[in-house]
Length: 88
Image 1 (spheres, rainbow, N blue to C red):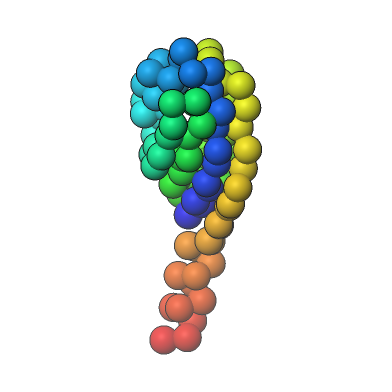
Image 2: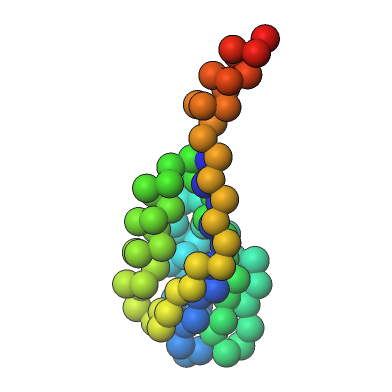
């Protein structure tokens, strides 16, 4: 499981189009935004590779000026489940 939090800066005149594009992405949630185009988003997905690709894809959305990774959490569920099974 991987959870990432980002700040996305969009051009103010493109906020609605950027919102639509972000909302169409699997595991992406917009938590806050302002009229200047700054958005706080998260990506929650089992695959670390998917999260990396989603962050890269966001930079190519028309109207996005920048993306900044703020936080990332990764947990290897297979290892955790195996460890729990070994201890039981």
